[in-house]
Amino acid sequence: MSGPDSPVYAGVDIGGTTTQVVLCDAELKVLDRADTATPARSGGRAMIAAVLDALAVVRARTPGRLAAVGVGAAGVVDSASGHILVASDSFTDWAGFPVTAALRAALGVPVFLDNDVNAFLRGEIACGAATGEADVLGMTLGTGVGGALWTGGELRAGAHGAAGEIGHIPGFGDLPCTCGGRGHLETLASARSLRARYGERTGRELTAREVAEAAREGDADAHAVYAAAGAGVARAITMTAGLVDIDTVVIGGGVSGSWTLLEPLIQGPLAAEPPISGHPVKLLRATLGADAVPLGAAARARHEPAAGEGGPGPAR
Image (cartoon, rainbow, N blue to C red):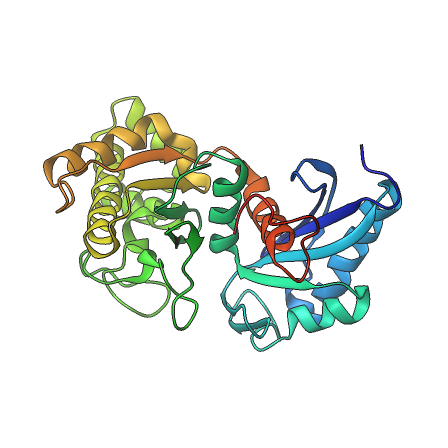
C-alpha cells in the first residue's frame, strides 16, 4: 500500500471521445482510475484541463507523491518535444499542441508523450500479453488500424515517430483509405472497413461485431469480409517479420473482440506464407483491454531516468 511519501505514476489515455487516467504504484499496480469525456472540439487547452481534472480526482483519493506522468494520445506525436504533430479531424487545435509542456507547468513533474498505439504496446509488454517478449509488432484493429514496433527490448519510434505503422502502408488492394491513400491495410481490417465491405457486398448496414456474428452463423459474405481482413493482417505480419525479424505479434482493439473468428483467419495465411526466417510468429491477443494505453504510458513514466526512483522500472 502506498504511503504519503511513496512515488506514484499517472498514465493518461487521451482518446477521441474519452480521456482515461490511472494512478499506479512503482510496480504498475493500478491504485485508482477516473475517466471523463474528451472535449476534442474545444482545443488543446480544454483537453489538458480535462486531464488535470481527472487526475485531481484520483490524487485526492489516493495517498502518494506524484513522481511522473505518461500520456498516450491519438495521432502522430514527437515524443522528444512532447508535441502532437498530426491529429485527425475529430480534434480541434490539437496538432502542434505542446502536451508535455502544458502538463509539466501545471503539475511540476516530468511528463512523457507517446502515440496511443506505442503506449498500447508498452502496456502489453510491461504487464500484459507480451510480457518478456523482445521483438514484437503491436497492432490495434479498431476504428482504424494502428501499429507499433518493439525490437531489442525497447520501443522503436523511428526517425519521425511512425515506426511500425503498418496500417497505412499500401499494397493491400486498391480501396481508398480515410487518410487519402489507397490500398492500405486499414481498408480491410478496421471496424469501419469491415462494416463498409459487408455493406458493399450485401447492401446491409451492420456493425463490425454484427458482421462477426453473421460470419459465425454461416453468412458467406460476412465470412469473406473477415477472411480478407485476416489475410491482410497476416500479410502485414509477414512483411514486418521480413524487414525487422519480429517473432511475436500482439493484437488489440475492438475488432480483436471477435478473436475466435479472426485468429484462424490470420493463422491460415501465415502458415501458407511464413516469414523468410522460417520461424513461426507467435500471435497473441492483447489482455489489458482499455487499460493498455494508460498503463503503457505509466510504464514509460516509471522507467525514464528523469522520473524513475530506485532503478529502472518494468518496461521501456
